[in-house]
Length: 180
Image (cartoon, rainbow, N blue to C red; front, top):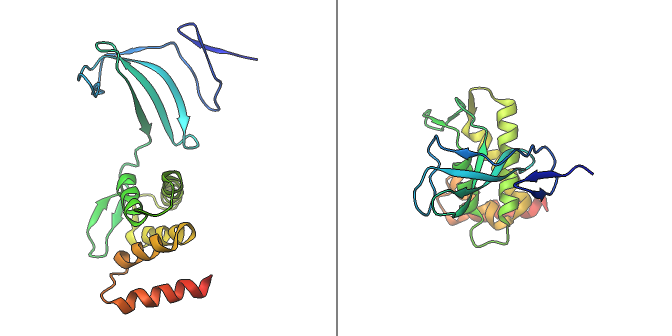
């Protein structure tokens, strides 16, 4: 069995991860959340969310506070074409925020929400190069929420489809019940 060592401590092997000697990082804008110092050392790096992000445990060299950072690929240039023909930069965070609002106070785990976002991001980045219609994203979110939670689905649908009256809700729930 091959063991990886950092500072004479054996690390648990992980898929798709290369462990290096702990390094001191002095450049850049990674500040300690406790003291604001910009010098830290990377203690551990691991792939997370099926390799979509890299999770790093860091230790501040000034106050020894430990904190976690995440790295992910930036999808530069991918724009969302909105209903009113505005263009807005695609944002994974905004997508997750909308899904979290729909799932608020519902029995839907953060992991399930993040998995849905990861799926949508993968489909969008594979299918569209520079511009994605907002309605394509909205449809994928609705399809995903329908599988996760009926209430979250109706909440999202009410905003996405711009419900005006209570009858709009009733019709959507009836459609939902008919497909079950």
